[in-house]
Length: 178
Image (tube, rainbow, N blue to C red; front, side, top):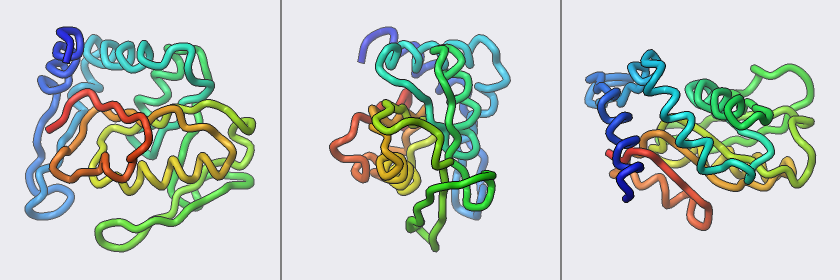
């Protein structure tokens, strides 16, 4: 890891807090909202991500909900469009969707059918890579919609959950692994 990568990882680490027993007892939630409230830290993370993909992508795709915050900021920094991937029933108009399994149950996500032209190069962004289920489902959905997923990017990776394995064969980058 280069010195620059270490410093951006340290910025993220310095702005993380653990919320015990959220969303359920026994879980220590990694909250990055302190990063969002620090303008300089947020700008540094957005620039770091944007610089990695400048000239390589046509759209940024953000996964509901915290992926919207980062994704929109990175899209703005790059001067390109932003496409939201949302939970079922939240997008107006014609959508494409995919159902996928979660640790306990299942979920359904959607994207607008006309969000981008076939062959568009997209970067998928979320706040955390955990088990990889949502990331994998999003990439599958976008490819079914005709996009080429260039990479998946997250600020934090919960390495012990091995979510990266579900994205095997894909470019994956995370800023901080805990």
